[in-house]
Amino acid sequence: MVTAVTNLGRSGLFDWVFQRVSAIVLAAYTIFIVAFIASHPQLDYATWRNLFDQQWMRIFSFLALISVAGHGWIGLWAVLTDYVTDRMMGKKALTLRILALSAYALVTLSYLVWGLEILWGF
Image (cartoon, rainbow, N blue to C red; front, side):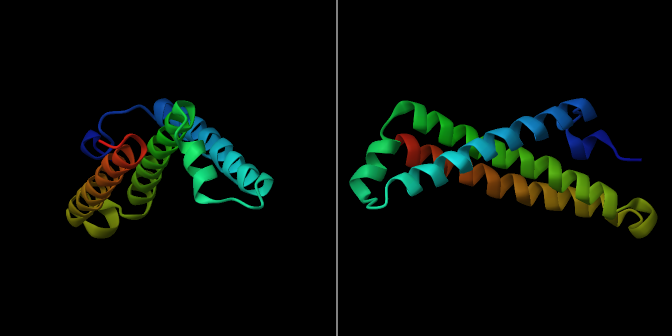
């Protein structure tokens, strides 16, 4: 049985919806960036900077960062609960899941803060 400790008490429906919405945000962001680069064959720093100086692009980029973080969290949780099981590893399984998710949370939080700093110069 998977405990609420590792999934923070979310429902499966929330996870499913968030995975789909975050996948759409990431797909849209990827398509936009690829199209922007393709439409600017002489892309230089000034053009790139002008794009990211726009508020809507900063918000879009931050939504993409949040989508990566949440999508990765739910994916890692699903993989760990499917393959690192109590039956296979005994009490070590819960400890391993908590350690892996804690490490992911720490790294992801630092990337989100770094992303905020880059996008808005905090």
